[in-house]
Image 1 (cartoon, rainbow, N blue to C red):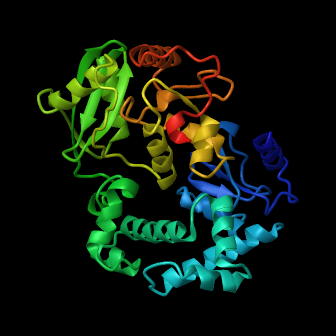
Image 2: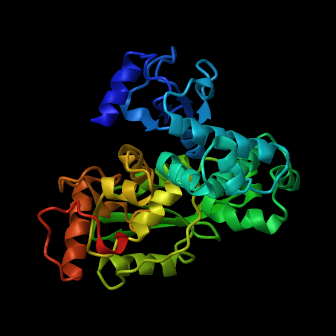
Amino acid sequence: MIEQHYWNAVAARSRQADGAFVYAVTTTGVYCRPSCPSRRPRRQNVQFFPLPEAAERAGYRPCRRCHPRQQNANDHAAERVRQACRLIDAALEEGDSGAPRLDRLGAAVGASAHQLHRLFKRQLGISPRDFAAARRLARVKARLRHGDGVAGALYEAGYGSSSRLYERSDAQLGMTPATYRKQGQGMTIAFTIVACPLGRLLVAATERGISAVSLGESDPALAAALAAEYAAAEIRRDDAALGRWVTAILAHLDGAMPDLALPLDLRATAFQWRVWRELQKIPYGETASYAAIARRIGQPKAVRAVASACADNRTALVIPCHRVIRQDGALGGYRWGVERKAKLLAAEKKAAGKQPSAVGGQPPRSLG
């Protein structure tokens, strides 16, 4: 209901809604204020965020027409968080390696350290320290995209050493900084396609980990989709190189290997990684609702964004997005077909010795 209200405001280009939220368009990577005069996007391509900083943390950039960062705040708590975010950005601009101390940030915006930490968690879903880390990494990404060398981008963003950047690169860049700078050029991806209980199974990987696990009916279609996903990479078929990982995935499908912990090499936003990590915590044979996952990552209103992150998952089974269903127990969508999702859940419940639940949307015990 809240998102429908937000969408109505966007559709009406309501100036009264400015400051209450911003909306981001997945197809353009831009976020706007509700009254933005730009062409209205399709509803399925829109995500909503409580603050501009939250949209930027998810990888979106501000619109140059409506300047959503400059909108007047209509919420005192949100304005305090905005002020703190601006102070953090200013510190990073000056070359500081991290956020100002929480007590100093709080004093600057008229709140105690505890109050400010709580406001950050409520408004953005993360702590001030995590926000500073995300903004610092965003600065590295921007520098790399503009052609700067890794060393220059690293030190300009305030990293004290290259090891600090590379510690985060696997989880947040999805690849090394040098590879990110070249937009994936130079990557070599090997793949294989085999039969499985759900049709045809494609597994693709770099030397660092799995980049794709796809399900389908046609080998040419699976291979073509992989080539389109990684257009700048060198892709080759290598059945032998992937044998160990394929064996593990097939054993998982047969119920012989419930815990499928395989290395990954994926491109993703920080928000997507947060969602995917929560998916990997859902126990074999159980399910969680999209709403439950949104709560677990500290953004209870981001249900639709969680669903989008599930839809963007390119590694079936390894990141078990099939275990996320609607709160009313309905299956919801699945990148590789709802019928496959139903078969996967039924097989996992059977292998785990569980009876199907009447309300599958309850969060699993391990997420509590």
